[in-house]
Image (cartoon, rainbow, N blue to C red):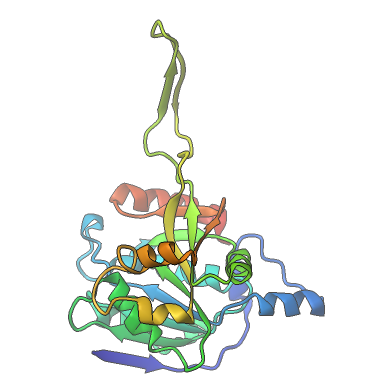
Length: 268
C-alpha cells in the first residue's frame, strides 16, 4: 500500500465565488455558524476507469468538463462554506496521473493526500484505507464518488447528520428520467409527448457524511453499500438527506456532453 502526501497551508481566496449562489458574508455570527457546520476532511473516490467515456490516459473522475476535471467541480462544492481543508484522493487506476495533476494541493488550497491501492480493494476498502490517512482525532468526513457532477447544500446535510447522530448520511436525489414521457387516453390519443421529468423515486447520489465510528465497520476489501450500509440499516444509524440540488451522473459520452452544457448554469 502506498500513500503520497502533500501539505499546503490553506488560504481563503476567490475560489469560493465559483459556486452558484455563494455570497461572502461579514456577519461574525453567521460565519461562526458556517464554520460550526463545516467538516474539514473529505475523501474523493477517483479509481474509475472511464471505459465508456473512451478514456485511456486518465481515470474517469479526470474527464474534461469545460477545461476542468469532474472532481474539481466537487472540490468547489465541498468548499462552498470554506470548511474543507484536507482532501484524500482514493486512487487506483492510473493513480500516477491523478497524483501528478493534484500535485501539492495548492491549486485547491488544501492538504492533498493521494491514497493508492496496489491491488483493488473495492469502494468500501478504498474508503477505509483513505480514512486512515486522515489526522488523528477526526470526527467526520465528507465522502464522494469522484465521477458525478453536483452542487448540493453540504452544510444542510452536515446539520441533519449531526442532529440525527447518524453513523452515515447519504445524499439522495431525483434524477431526470433518460426517456421522454408519453401520456395518452384509453383510446390511444396522445395528450402529452416527449418531456423528460424527474423520476418519482430517490436514488443514492454517491455523496456521504461519515462519522468516525464507521471506520471499524467498513470492509478491508469490498463494497460499503452491500456490507456496512446493510448493518447500519439494522442499527438504525443510517440517514438520508433529500436534495433538490443539481446532480448529474456521468457514465456515457452523451452524459459527458450534457454535463458540459449544464455546468455553466450551476457553477460560476
